[in-house]
Length: 438
Ligand code: ADP
Image 1 (cartoon, rainbow, N blue to C red):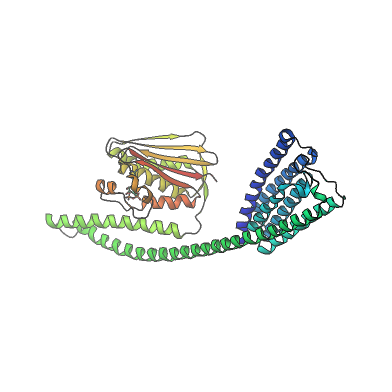
Image 2: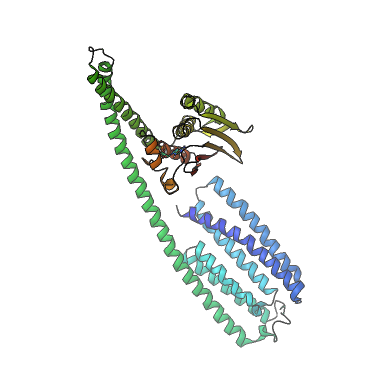
């Protein structure tokens, strides 16, 4: 959608205008107090104030169209951008008129407006804005020349009254107008190319997403089939292992036990793969209000037996203010449980695991820290990739899918949140999740 980029650029222009008007006020102040030129300072201060007023109105209006998203948003955004640039050009012409007119070297600041117009608008519209600028400029110079508008001379800066000098007016107008059109042409050529590049990148991205979806659907189907067969194998192994089909000799028992363990591990892996693929494929996950504190408590209860078995001390620190957030409770609980289970798994006996939950303006920050084996620095960038397991983790613990963290990442990103890790090998890790409350 074209207007999305346009609204972003409009927001940028509004922010830029605050900087520009501060610059204008400072320049006028310096001209008045330091350079001490005699100029009509009342309008020179009034114009930036007016710019500030219309900029505030523009700011409020952008909020309004973002929120309401009316059907004709694209047309409105284009008109809105043209209006803003038009008003800026009028304001600059007024500023220039009250500070020397055609004699003021700041006339070349119109070029910035041409560049801005080319970034925001189509090539045709930026040429129209260049024509509007040329008309404003010629009218200002003409009206001052014919004394219809009073001229405010930059005494002490310009020696002669150049605004009455025909050759100077014609020469300056010629250079000024050709510069305007050249600037509009060059800037719009670059910006048209960039916009096309942006569009093709977006299309390529959509194509990649589609391919990824097809791949996930394929994985889902295959994994589902494999799961059914493995479950059938397990249901054959179990009665044999339990001796329901007659007593087994020690060799048979050992082989059946090993087959049973491998099958359970495989089922665990397949379930994780199925789950992550389902999350990826589900376009919308149901979001409801739930208590993050209770959810964290549930996750702690789930992992507690494993921590106790390794004599790991698990503590919690929860801000009094945090409680209800909006999201998919089951997924968040699973994510916290996964991270806690990892901390227990990768922390030697007698270690410590801590979960903290804090309020962070509009979001909650959940941290799970341990003083375990940590993650080697050069492996940190890959830790959230599917199937990735760090070298030290593989040495310590043979079993692992490498899917837990990528699942956590999927879940958190689906909530418009962020997950990251700080870790030092041999000293421990802290996994942090930032989740918006709404
Ligand atoms: P798994 O634990 O099954 O290997 P995960 O996706 O949960 O898979 O984790 C991926 C890898 O991240 C782990 O193999 C391990 O290398 C590293 N990791 C995760 N949590 C921790 C932790 N608390 N301490 C050290 N390493 C961790």
